[in-house]
Amino acid sequence: MRKILKAPLMALTIIGLSSLVAHASEDDHKHKSHQAPHGDMEEVMVHAKVNSVNIAERTLNVSHGPIKKLHWPAMTMDMKVADDIDIASLDPGQEVMMALARGEDGIFRVTKTMMH
Image (cartoon, rainbow, N blue to C red):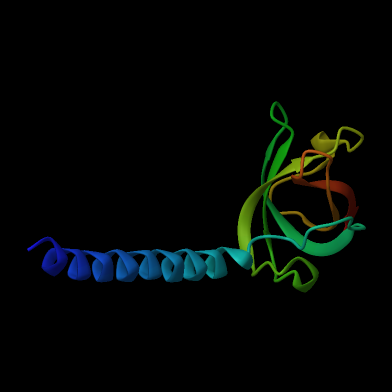
């Protein structure tokens, strides 16, 4: 009786593990488009529209087109702003060219802005 139950149980375990690996791989693929390649990266320039400015948290909500170098699709997102940028000079509705760079903490932030 034990041998009869052992084979189906083993098969179900293998099938279950296989589906977990396939799901994890599929899930990883879905999120890759929002991640930047690993390693050192120089600044990336992007055209964006400023939707809102949060001076207290030093963030901008921006809408930008696809950023091929980062494998990012067009999206609206909150971006941290580097300390040396005069964030108060940016206004909602304004179109800007922004330089993005990954900080030591791994988070991308706006490192330069130019009025567009």
